[in-house]
Image (cartoon, rainbow over all chains, first blue to last red):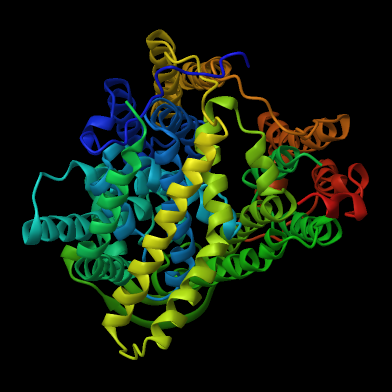
Length: 272
Length: 358
């Protein structure tokens, strides 16, 4: 490459623009697009029509084909055009922490010790960083434990929005901020569980029980069945995830936000 | 072997599995997969993950059977046993717990759970046979930055364990003996602070070596971004039509294909703005193509058999459960099983050459 010297190095992680400013207009459009695509992918049982060319078992697989493309587009936009080397290194290291923490919690009553980290990452470095952190944490964790499957794109999108929401919380300090973060932790932990369960509902229980997804029933009847199914099977998991997230936020957020914000200030050493 | 070739083969087999509920064929495919995994996996850490997929498959069959027995609707008339029956009130959709357990219902639950389990086994095979680090190295150049972040994450993760031990040892030396919730804060925050300091040192090192300086500066053009967004949206609308509007199946499939093609081309295009070269790229050889074709062939056999419209072929792949009949094998299934076993002929066993590459 001939361009060895770049007179104007790009940087976005400087002290003034640590938060939402790092998300460009283009990245915002991409994120809205991801939200729309993600919502369709998670809510597919609602609009599934019997007699379509696709078996209900194959529907999440079809989305597992489309979601990675959308994720590739949005993550490439977020990391390629909106982040410098320091942002990338922080992203990698925070994702590594999440990937190490995640196996600790699995299997024990829905303990999910990564949501607090995504929320705090989004809070300290902005919504775009939060989205990328959520997606890359899930991806790295799946690679480390060899858990790549059709659920991975869904987890990446959902975890991305958990981190994104952390960055879009209103400006506050002290106890108010802690309360806001904990509230988002509670809400996002439940919504994450519901969306994941809903998208894989026909997978989880099979097609022939009374709690099963019925392609011939209308939306209200299916939602009713799903609520009962969810209360009976995964309420405990969702509650466990929500409580873990809130407890970890209350316990660790003050100290961790201090550390993360200090890093954001220190990362601003390059000239703009 | 190229990691994406293994993935193509495994996804092809998974697609074939998704089109059949014949337990005999599923058992044959599962045995074939196990043979391929055991004979072709390396000593790498990800290769040992396959046990977890077996456990997951067993758990799925167990959960499905449990719910079928407890909540199964009344399919068929061959009652095996009758459990005490509880009717839930009307607000709970009048669900009936217990009651008659029929052989037809159980068979249906087992067939469907078996199909899902074997699909999981295909993913397990891909996870244990494909080298994730090499797969990561051959992502499109547009995802270069993201893949760098993942590589950082994968290489930093083991260091965090060491960092945790160091922090805990330092705490003990200082006489910190408190237990309970205080320990969490006292360990987690120093470990994270250490990790973040490490990442800033890493970033300084990367900048000093000119990382990310090959971009032309202006980034990707707005037109390209708009095209990528439109392509991604087209793919989504395509899936929406495929699932929700049977009368627009052809249009949906067309939009899905156009969207996928547009996204891939757009990502290649935007990747070209980066002047990134690859160090020792993994070559895609003829054998890799052959392996991918094997996967596609495995998926094509049941698809063609179903599309042919001959009821005998359809029944062979989807044996009837009501009335319950004994599933039979059909000659059409030979190519499916042969393609599952094909990697044994196409690839060479892991020897000295594959162990050298990490």
